[in-house]
Length: 117
Image 1 (tube, rainbow, N blue to C red):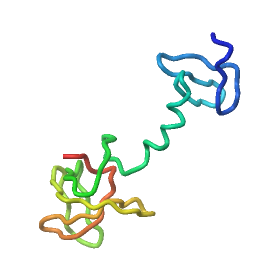
Image 2 (cartoon, rainbow, N blue to C red):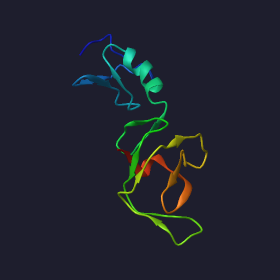
Image 3 (cartoon, rainbow, N blue to C red):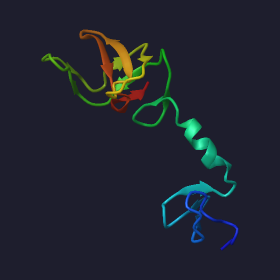
């Protein structure tokens, strides 16, 4: 093992290599051998991602992946419904997609229940 490889998070000397990553058994931190990728990873995670991890942007079309009950109504958004022209929004309750669904109207969705079309 390379003695120079210490965990950047807890400074443990017990780090080991697992394929392309280094792993610390004490704090479970993972980083690449170059060390630069771990610093860039949080910047890449910004934005809204769908259930498959694809980055969503305003104006995208998405497909609902499961039946969703509409709160305060007896309506249901069926799985497989295509929603066009979404708008992304910051929301504390997790509903980060604003959209208009045919037959139901304007509503907010959680990105974890859609996939990019």
